[in-house]
Length: 610
Image (cartoon, rainbow, N blue to C red; front, side, top):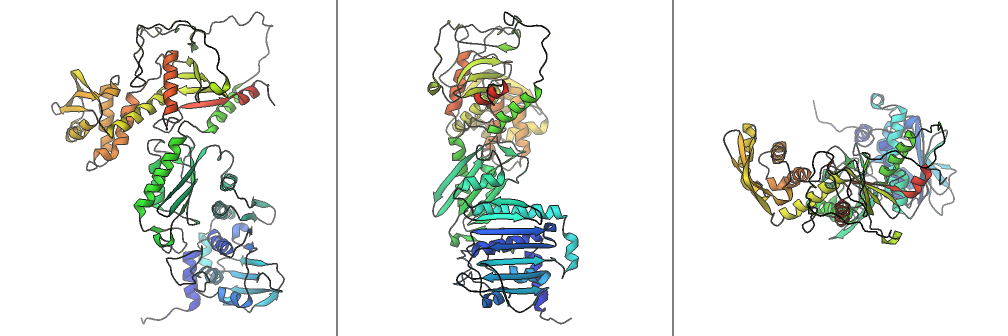
């Protein structure tokens, strides 16, 4: 078989296979052309999910008769004036989209440049170009695509249902709408308007319109600039997550891209703040000097290559992490709303059998363990544990077991005097702290909150030196032989984190010292958990590289447990430390440490507000 040149039409169809995967892919190319043309309004119409018909109309600069002719030729473009592939200022630059689409569909372009007295139209069917002819059209361009893949019918069987193709098209428009809030976008079919985004100067307003209600209340702003790299956008609170990564939108120089470096950086920024089975919400815009990023690595331009990927990743991780820490006491507003909605569902009005007078006489004992500044703790010996547990909520704070709080009348503070997490009023079921806040009620999970505080202290001290506590009698712990061997190999590394242990036979280890912060922890369970953590990753990985995983295990064991009775002073001490910790809004597993119920919402439950 001799080597021969392929015919031009077949070359275009091969290119279409790379660029025009489905209607949404072709739509993306046409909208990007409209953006490059300077359009401030872009209207899309689709029929049958784009399989039968779709069009893109813009009010951009338009094209002359000669430019129409050139636009459908392969590799004809106006977007590389200096022919430098590393100095690209437009979304499209290859000149492949229009001829590729025209080779597999019936394409018609109608355009009128600003200032021109007439418009021109050109049709290309299956790669066969017609002649330009006069047409009626306003300033700008309309590109119509009919019968996609009619020239390559084998491709039709790979298309999905009309509804699925429409959803893919909506996703394309949504992504471009977020990247260009100053442009108005709309999508309609033959019956109704599906999307309508008026132009706006507010990025947050546009992103919120795309993602939906509640986004603006549950994200923090991210802003950074370093070595010519600029980062802006929004990162979701650690308690505002999704089951998949579908609501992570990453843009580089105006392009919505998929890049492992960037997605890994986002995940890394949330390490220790969310669980392993959920994904953060993020909309991030990265502007990188053209010379430092290559956008010419994928036919669909959905991937990029960075000159210094490590620097870009560092900027993302550091900036997102800093923004989250600055708003660390904030949790998702959706949690409180969901809680109230469930409360409403559970409320079933019951008719009274007889009028009640003189107030409720039943006992509330057993329902609340309520402490106020004018009452002694109630029920602190009900579990057979008469000894008030000694706490170590901070290095400088501890509660003596022989101290009894004297009754003192304290004036209720004004709203301006309330600390951010309020003042503790009660302990519910020996697990939840009830606090009165400036604007409502705050419910704190005591274990989750203290777990976060312990974790942060462990992380800080591993960077310097960690205080240890020697055990009077070494703790002998039975383990599997492979676990003993693993802990023995890592003994020196564990010592740096405050754990001093020796191999004590084939199936035992002797623990001699532990971190002082964990003096009340169940040592056996803790060592077992650390062994399990070490088994999760390759034995060749240094322990310091997985310090967060180890510290997370330690923090869980060294925290106040549910079922632990706390005094009002201990509760308030915990609340104040939460306020001082930049990541206290969620535990190390990503769950909220507290829920705030707004007074206005509570009043609605009781009919005080409409």
